[in-house]
Length: 521
Image (cartoon, rainbow, N blue to C red; front, top):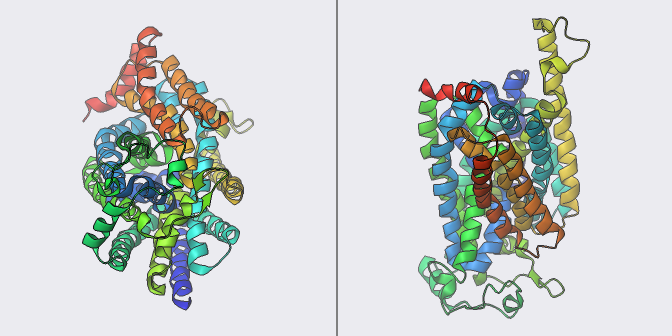
């Protein structure tokens, strides 16, 4: 216990120290939100990866999908690396950097408002982002708190509150630059931690070969067969150790949600706004992909052996396992030093994701709802012009409001985490489904296609949010939250494309002016 507490205290002191050191660079809006658009490839790549993978993946997704799909759950990690990292950087990185810098966009809602010339889109996008980032944040709290409860014996509620306070401290102090530096430190811990834990856990099962052999003998339990989804209806012996598992199509839906979804999440895409230049993007692509392959691939690979450990608790009323307890139960028998490493691993992953989420939410609310226009400050502008003194005053006020909203956002998501309505994986499915379902298609197509119309963007917002909310209100009667999120994302492309064909186009002059940024490169 002394070792666990000591390592955790050292780690937390370092994160707060980084926030204090970075505070001078967080005085302006660009400095607080984007790190002055001068963050290098290593910091950006690790910030992308650590924001991507948190306790939601390590505890929630790895446990639940490892149990359902066995060793084939590893494909989710491969998809995260290839689609969620490699292709995301190749397709989005350069164009996002150039266009957002050209139109002076700082947030994703700001992009929609400026790219399509519609302040209503900016307003709607900022509200969607704020609302649906909350359940994802709550899921992160739940994941890390369950690991802390296992490793330290501290009640779940206290863990969640402590994490909320510590994350708030270093984000409020140092903004994005502090977050990026801490992400780098936390990323190194994650790389070392996941590889070590996998080796030790498999060794406890007699080694890799023996563990795979035992997974080949694993079959669905009586409780599995009560699963109303029919996931194991056509199960064959050895499916849990096969290449594609017992339900390939269901597995594909998870791969799509967790991999393609990152392309439309404000906290992920925002990383491309802040990177220094094109050469940094090329290096960042390689770093980010390798990071994802090790961390995500390792998490799902580890979770795929969950059936070799004691069966998790089952709730007969809901016909559901306590999926979020699977990974913690796999780690309970580890030596204290390794449990300390696991706690630091999940703590690192979760604090980086929390920092990214709260920074994205607060900046969106401040820049896209409260201060949509510099000239909206009544009494501070004379003759339509803003002098340097007033401009500096406005900048300071914006940063102050963002810091206040960080506290508000953390408190709100903490309330949900203390009274969670769903499993971690379902919370993430709702969040990613609504956000990426609404934002992915109009953002990606808006970078490449001049023909996207304003009405098509509105239609996609309604589609992504509408489908997710309707399914949630009907008790997931249409689809489970994971598959619903995947359908929302992919369907958004059809919505934007078809509606754009039959609705009025944006003025060619304005569109050409926006796309002129690509002609220089």
